Image (tube, rainbow, N blue to C red):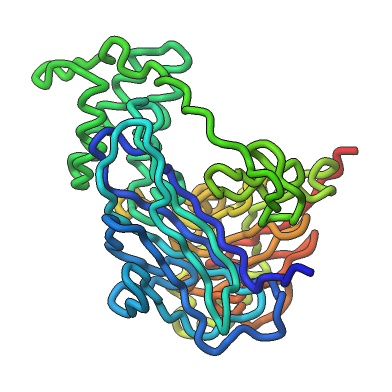
Length: 406
């Protein structure tokens, strides 16, 4: 009988590095599954790296920001344990991991780190990979979540726009977008990416005319075929017998150890989740009554119709866009309601078992749910139901809805 783990661990990254690339970034999400009644008092996040790889930093970025690098204890050579304290049963935390890896030849793949959650024993694990490529389309992309937490969202957006334009055959737009990305990469000190981008475009700085280098973004050679599962092996994700490279049950990659995608809830094929963002006069009056002498400083909410916005992916950030800070929320609340009291990173919606849950990562003015006057606890994961109303800022309400597609 397989013991149920107390945590799920997932990794978001672009594992592709250019020839000579050594800096690797990843966002690690750790979520309690409720598999144990209560996790251990002192849960450890272990980062084990192979010879030649150095752990530059590990920072918690959700629900609050905290640098764990200096807390690490080296329990064995190249094995670093970071204390994270006590966890709730279904709590979610996210970490930004920065590694320095030795440069390898193009085509080489390595496991750069093994992350494990420990609390009286192993409770969950995932891997971070690095792969070197001469395909500049692959190695110039920045993972969206990594970009968000490293303040490179605008840079990632420019690169993606350039790649999309190149695929559409619009070389002029592609060159302009990638030139903007090159300037941003230089400004933020991303030397490796700036070097790659400088090989993609060419032009005249004085006349500001740029073009794609011929053949610069041609697809590289297909990756070498990886070995299949060994005879008699068992998938660590679903315990089915291994056959071929990928598990037929959950999609686990036996060659690299990368887990398969989470199963899509059965309701996902028959329904579509979305939110309606609107100004809420009743909630605004409640805020005014609680503000006392500060009420006069709050402006009146604009009268605007509610906006219907789809929920896509497994994680949706609600907030206000800030180019200066590199904050690009999935749902920008600055435009629909113009609410000045909404934080730049105000709340997070997580897809959970066919529905959604809510986390306030530490907004300035708090988040409320339905008619409850008290604000939700910072960092707590709150299950949501269809029709729930999330109140943020001074007058903004986000209502969760579902549309049947059957």
